[in-house]
Length: 120
Image (cartoon, rainbow, N blue to C red; front, side, top):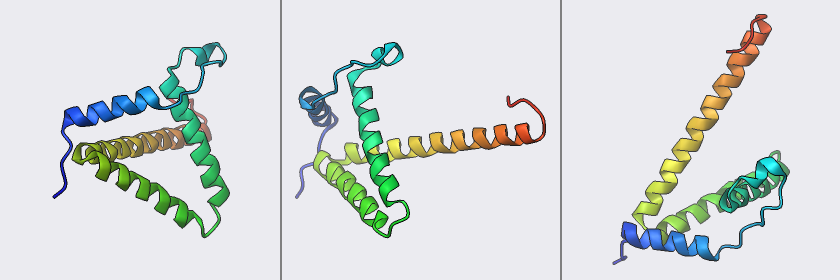
């Protein structure tokens, strides 16, 4: 039988990762200087994933990229327990909602511009 992680155990593992993960040094310009190391690290990871995806966008190998990402998320959820799985699903939903919101705003702005109005 698998041992389920408690919220406290999950929080401890997250803090351990944050304490031991190498974070980039904040040597950025003034606007970026106010950003936390974890935000800069997240941006760096997203840039790397975006580059990988861009390389594979028109390739049949993009399926392998998605498979690898979902495998890693499944391993994180399994290792960290049901609370981590819930966090992953919650974050995924939040990201989808943000993407949809930005896309909707972009389409509205384009429609307003095409109609000769200023976007609101």
